[in-house]
Amino acid sequence: MGNPKAFLTIGRKEAGYRPLHDRIYDYAEVEQTLNIEDRRLQASRCMDCGVPFCHWACPLGNRQGEWQDLAWRGRWEEAYRSLAETDDFPEFTGRVCPALCEKSCVLKLHDAPVTIRENEVSIVERAFAEGYVTARPPRRRTGKRVAVVGSGPSGLACANRLNRRGHRVTVFEKNEFIGGLLRLGIPDFKLGKKIIDRRLKLLAEEGIEFKPSVCVGKDFKTKELLEKFDAVCVTIGAGVPRDLPVEGRDLKGVYFALELLQQQNRVNAGAQIPQNERISAQGKRVLVIGGGDTGSDCVGTSIRQGAVGVTQIEIMPKPPVGSNPDTPWPMYPQVLKTSSSHEEGCERRWNLATNRFIGKDGVLIGVETERVEWEKDDAGKMTLKHTGETEVIEADIVLLAMGFVHPELDGLVGDLGVGLDARKNIAVDDANRTTVGKVFAAGDASMGASLVVRAIASGRRAAENIDRFLKGQ
Image 1 (cartoon, rainbow, N blue to C red):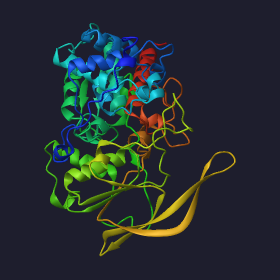
Image 2 (tube, helix red, strand yellow):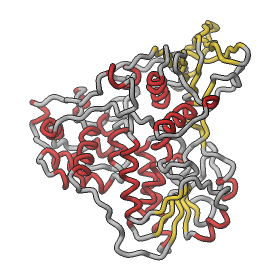
Image 3 (cartoon, one colour):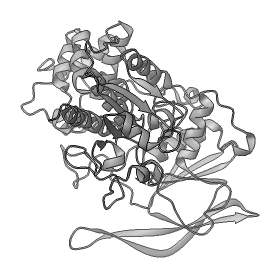
């Protein structure tokens, strides 16, 4: 596991971001890379710790110590093979995962964890560059057919694993592009879409059939779906965003975050959007409501569109800086996160609730907010207290980035007749089975909105269970 003493002599070195004055004028990936020698030295910092908490924290069970040792020794192809055994798409997770593994690294106790995520993406990019990653179609086919509905990370992972087991897999996607939120929800400056295209080309060469612009339940009837396929896996994500039903919600200028992000990704792909439908922050004051990753993506996109000012507000308190005693190591730390987008120019504020949207002639001009306080009761539960102290924030555009609540409940889900749980997600058992015979579900559609890495893990698990079902086990 790396050089046992390297962590004592070699400091943590991150690749960092492209210069701010350069990156805010384009949508190219903001993250830079280290040279190979520096990357090997960073991999060597992975020490032979007694309990590999990085492995424990990773939803995929990646064997970080193993492939970092191989990278340090310059055995890049073996490092990639080890990584690919547990992670179907390390080029995705290496870019957009919040690195649960790093937060659990033993060296995190000294605030200098191994650069696991950067090392991961370096291994897979070297593998592509040197030709280690090639199409490997299955040698035999089972004669079984599986439909995967939804082409996000869980759907692609499920399709990949089932295809490798010899089943014929067809992936249906309602949008014009394959990739789900990887394609349309994550900005290009975090995940370049050529990275997705490169992987999809391999999957197609291995025998997976992709059908974009096909809405199952509408363009392709569910009855026909159940008749033609031996199993179905629903991986449609948690597509319903959390709304803010306050006064003025219908004003022009108030949008869901994904309305902006999806449109900009389509524009970057060459789509022509009618001017009257275009959401643009150029020359406007932008208010982002919601302090998570989606809100951060809205900040970076608004800045690139030419906003004159961006403010991001959050109803929760400002997280601690550096460490949080409520989430000690090796737990994922609930601390203040500053993204590349925040560094590009954004005012961030906490403890603000939204009372109403203010408009003039049907157009947004401002938002009335109220300062709130949070108190813990005897059971440790946080309770909200309104102070009555209000403030109007001037804004021309508001972007609601408050998360997602559940999958679309009409259309496909309704036609299939699958049951829902208390949160209105698709109800599944421990084997990913729904209440309908050969219909399975995975990813955010079944577990609620989560991380890309957890969606991939869920898709892999669903594939294993579907494979057992098709074999009569």
